[in-house]
Image (tube, rainbow over all chains, first blue to last red; front, top):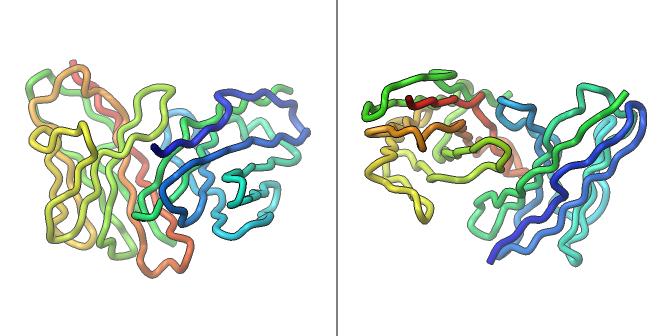
Length: 109
Length: 118
């Protein structure tokens, strides 16, 4: 079966750095996405990785290792507004997104 | 950009009634749109893939006669929840893929529709 695993909840301090991990097992791979979702709102796109390595975009970076079936989202200089759920999703061989359950990130002052 | 809208943003209806939700791609043509459902504190669950000009492809466990999908044009897909019941109360989100958006296969999400069935 297809499976995406990520921690249910994480807590971090404002101004700090946090890494959210995602491991996956899917039938085929056409890229891995990270989305941010605030409560009651639709997901917003953060990053896309299809090749191994680190993609940096401002305070957010995303890493992928296809051989390990592993990705992480790194958030630097945390701000209170970063409190949200972070969803990892993998596009399988049929170009369908397989979603993780999301990681709720709580930022404390 | 690639903007997707949904209407209505929220709806409250009585049990047994039908509710139609519209999903529009505002600045691009989407041959494929996706309908998701999300219950509180859970992840997105794909309900169906909507293809312009053809029948939608439903995920296992989703009743096609209850959740009617019509993708009549390249910019509009509709989801009709027929004979809604309280257990259908959920957050319904559509997304669309812009075939001209390059290699990243990104899906652009609408703002979602919160359905409450009394």
